[in-house]
Length: 160
Image (cartoon, rainbow, N blue to C red; front, side):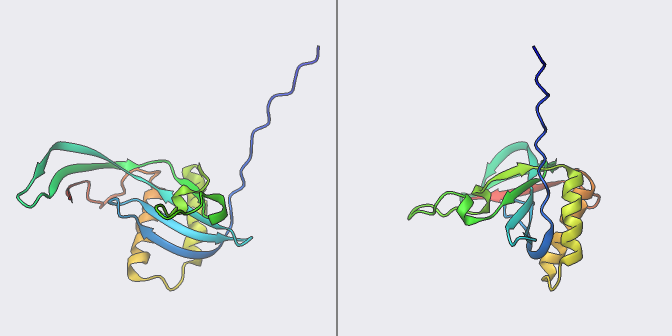
């Protein structure tokens, strides 16, 4: 009986950046997202999620605000999202779905460097905040997710 051939590896091509839509820091305390359009006009987002560990006990003040010291340990593997609204759940009266609800896949740090190199080359007319977030996101990716030098590692986080 002939042997069956080994399964073929699925090769996912990286999208080529045609236009930079935005670069931002997410309100979770330091994750980064770069949104862009590819050659075919498809919308994508490269995301690097921040990872913390809690240090010590939560403290609650007289106004009900909770404080917690946290330490930045790094960033998780980069994720590439397809931001096409047709590829994610339909919005309802009670839920609006963002790019984070679309199909996604982990990519390597080298692949993220390739995409961000294209983003950096095409980024124009960024606000000063977006330009700084681009610089910081590039530094995180260059360090393979380790906190780059100069980033504050420990701080107090507050929430209601």
